[in-house]
Length: 217
Ligand code: MD6
Ligand code: FE
Image (cartoon, rainbow, N blue to C red):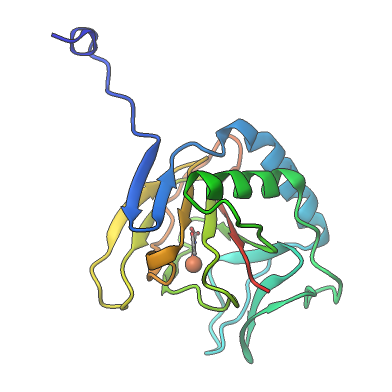
């Protein structure tokens, strides 16, 4: 008989989960630096506020976005692309804060991508009801770079499929502090986030924040 059973403890959740070849989930990886991350985010928002961008098809996105780093991901009626300037201000995006960069490099290294140095960070803010339909991340120049994705605030379901839109999807609950890294054979897998549930997070309020680090240029 194990003492765990005797005391009725749950076994600890695994810290590392493989989602697919090349794709791993590092549970709680961002918790150590959550306050630095959220503080740096507040400073970014002052210079480059969250905004609802328009897709090339003319739909307003339910997810609000901003960026930091040398380049930022933008969409408007003319298409999706990376741009060195914020179209709202006409100025450069705020630089990537040191705690963002260290977390991205550490997580990528743990996941088997030690050479990753992101030049762009797309920041997504979901309020209850906001969603991101199944898509591939394919506006980056070099798919040899993985993507590092940090979840903060309210939990969400992450749908992770395959190379074809119609491939079956697996679902992962992403919580505050979880970091997903994917690249290699799964770099172009379809993924999405169904409508965020209502809630309030003690550190982030009624929202989920997702930081995705990319090698864009
Ligand atoms: C999100 N993430 O988690 C949306 N893309 O809010 C993405 O679309 C994403 O998490 C590429 C790699 C990781 C991601
Ligand atoms: Fe994506």
